[in-house]
Image (cartoon, rainbow, N blue to C red; front, side, top):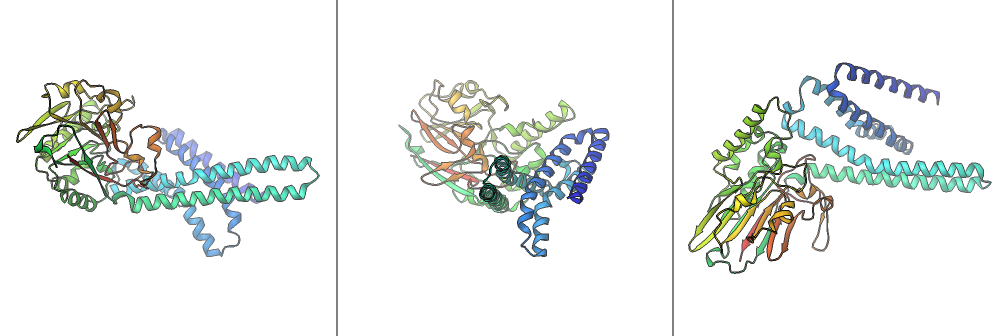
Length: 438
């Protein structure tokens, strides 16, 4: 007991010393240090429940289990030293993305065990208090032990399921593309538009792609659909335009009969990157505009174009990012985008954030037949079956994935083809959407 107490005091002293150095000489690392301290504390707390259950295992299995369990902490320390030498933005995409992904995975997988172990400890405390005052100590002691063991084992098992699911989602889910198909019926659709094939893609987040190979597969899958037109509904990059440069050639292979039209998402403005000056931020944005121009994708910024197809007009309008959430840019101007739109034409609106549909689009005096959005990613985690759908996204967004209809007007929310934050997907596959008009 005294030996364990000595080790604990030594570890606390070490962290206090490191904390003093960080707060005194490296103030920019205060938050990473606090984050590390919290993670290490949670690991020790969960390890205290795992360790007694490892006694029956062989020495080699205990070593392997201990290494796997403490790997994220070791990785965090190594990464911390790496950040002193070179900032995270300068790391190679592979190292940066999977460093963040592994740390995030282990943090999430710790949450359930911590909750269950905490409740087990609370129960044990109250039961120990009752035992102290009770004469039926032995029977209650057995109950206390069995209840605590059940809770601990449940928490550890659920944490293992989360860890396995997220690990599989990183290794397999990110690039497991799926084509979602919709057949939309419009009133008085001109004959020239009957069977018109629209492919929608959204949320590339190219800063999270570690290889060109998946993008090549995605482009081949899109082109195989033989689209009449392709719409990209925003978030080409995570933070800076440079993330898109390595993928220019692959994106240029996308082909559609009547061209490719795109809009900006909240990430495309560069607002989530620390810039040294406003001039540097503006230069980054101008690089993005030039990227689209060189790619020959028509970027719609609060404007529209009219496609004349035989005797039919197809209006394609696009707005800059507009969100009902004040955290995100609100630059979209629907009135400006729709100014001069011919009456009686079929109207399609590209608007990155689906909250725009309820807030403005449905109330607009000219009915907009179809709005295409992205942004939510379906939170990249969820369950989708023919009979049941669930995702954490539904608690933040009324319209979070798929097709919605109101007053004969359609909204389609694309689940995104890329990922951000967690570099993986669980249950919500990266999407390519094919919409056929009829």
